[in-house]
Structure formats: C-alpha cells, structure tokens
Length: 108
Image 1 (tube, rainbow, N blue to C red):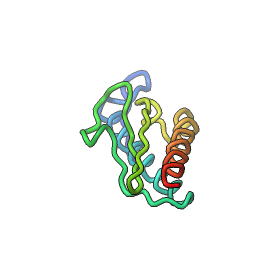
Image 2 (image 1 turned 90 degrees about the vertical axis):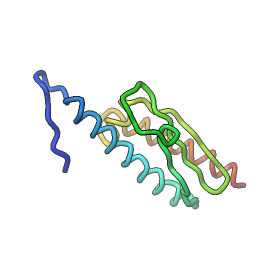
Image 3 (image 1 turned 120 degrees about the vertical axis):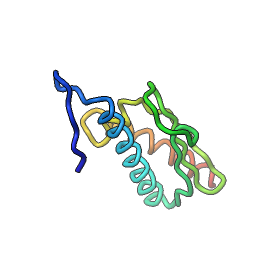
Image 4 (image 1 turned 60 degrees about the horizontal axis):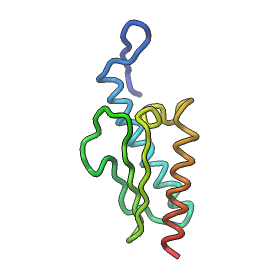
C-alpha cells in the first residue's frame, strides 16, 4: 500500500503525485499485458515515453508491441495517475482495447 501525503487543501505533494503516476503506469502495463494475453497475443514489450524517465507533463506516450506489430497511444497525465480510480479507468481501458485490436489486425 502506498502511503500518500497531502498538502493543505487535500492536494497530493509533488513527490507523491509522481509516485502515483509511476504506480498508474505500472498498473497500465499489467492490464495491457493481461488483455493482450486474453486476446491471444503475447506482449513482448511495453514502453512509456519512448523509454525516457516519466516526468510531469500533460501527455505520455505508451507503446505496446507484439512480435513485429506495434501500437502507440497517448495518455493524459490524469489518466495515468487516476488509473484504477474514478477518472482514468474506463478511458484507459478503452485505449488499451483499441491498441490490442490494432495489434491483432496487424498480426493477421
């Protein structure tokens, strides 16, 4: 369990917000790999922000590749940070589903 610290007004500190971003990114990778496996694909490689460290910015790039097929999508910082929460879960799962559909079509 992550112990998050809040500033006055109920806002996460910058460090804790970044930790939540990293946790969300890791969780998205796990879900993407699970969804790809369920679709009959083996996720060979998942990558955020072209392999660069994740920093605070409006949008992040997520790349999922299976074999020679590659699918890439942009996720907002809020989608990643709030993944498995109220805001980010459904839009993120919808994007992952579209990415996997692209990979399956490329594999055919």
